[in-house]
Image (cartoon, rainbow, N blue to C red; front, side):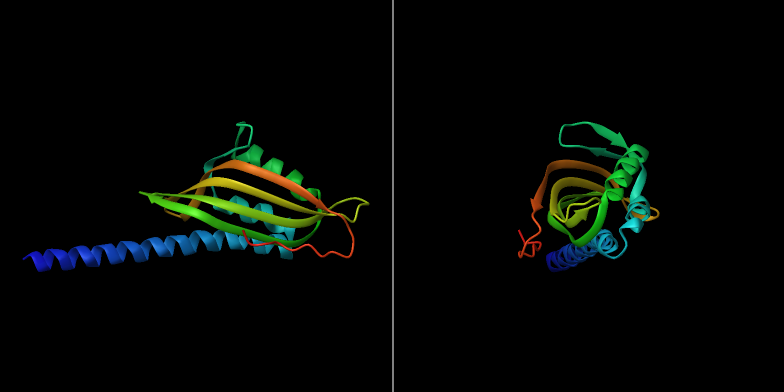
Length: 167
């Protein structure tokens, strides 16, 4: 009888581990789709992001101010409107934890871009956030994002070709 219980436990743990790996892959694919659309057609970034958010989504900036879904989308639309060209984009899962119907993760987002205007300078924007995804009947949706750190480094137009460096 003990062997049967042990076999069932091993099978259950293997199934849970496999399910967890599938969730990680699915969430990473969602982040990858945002990065890809930023580099191919940034005007499509907002519609892509909107599809990933719950109706009661909230975003907390580094100073602790909180925005609900629609004001957040508006703020991101203004940011995207100031981008002339995206050279590269990357979203990297730094850590994660399954918590019932929630998937909590720390994500590092990097965007190498040029702003609208006369300057040819490139910017490397890097942000780290703690995101919470929730399993819904429509799949995994982002419920909350809390910005931990943000930076914008100007890379002067010169002979140097900036690239995103792995952390």
